[in-house]
Amino acid sequence: MTDSQNNEFIPGVSEDVHVTPKAVKEIEKIMAESNLVGSYGLRVGVRGGGCSGLTYTLGFDCEERPTDEIIEIGNIKILIDMKSFLYLQGTEIDYSDGLTGKGFIFNNPNAKKTCGCGSSFGI
Image 1: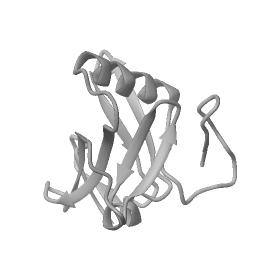
Image 2: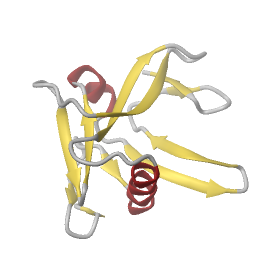
Image 3: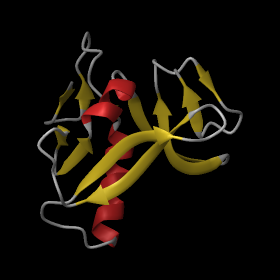
């Protein structure tokens, strides 16, 4: 669970998906650059594929589904379908803009194995 006032993590809650302040800032930047206003949210998901069996998906969506887990942080919404949420519980979504590359990073405590490039995982 996050505190939507200051984007800090609330200790002791492991079932939620956490989004770091750096990731929130990047999501807001991308949404502003793409003129995504109103009811758009970032849809985070998991699908089969990759060398370890599962891959993460990200995309903007203006449709909230009745079974979505919705996490609101400031002005953004994170939308996660229930099946994906089961794989993502306790995951921290961060953003890196370092020398090794730019992109969102999933620190998933449920992943028992990951591929060498870090783009897929297995349970």
